[in-house]
Image (cartoon, rainbow, N blue to C red; front, side, top):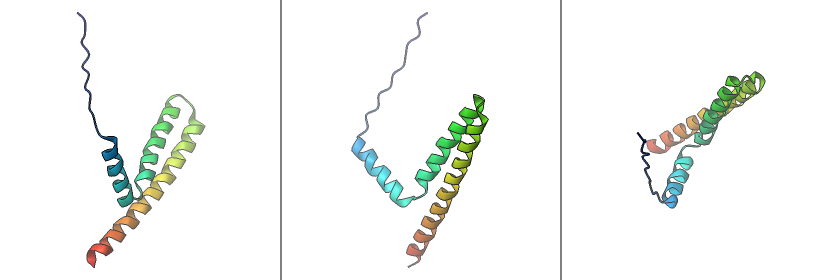
Length: 87
């Protein structure tokens, strides 16, 4: 029996995605750092799985720094918007 492939095509205007991303990044300063944290942590797990522990440790360290920066920036944004809403 031959298996059939299910193919789903989705068309999205790239201009609209670009506008959403810019708005999101303007409101959430820490988002790029938190996304970087996730990517670095996945890379660290991959290197650890293949047995390269020194590189995995360095990547995990950089991921942690990125997360700290991202959380601090998100706190700053929260405080900024809270003060502007109070006025």
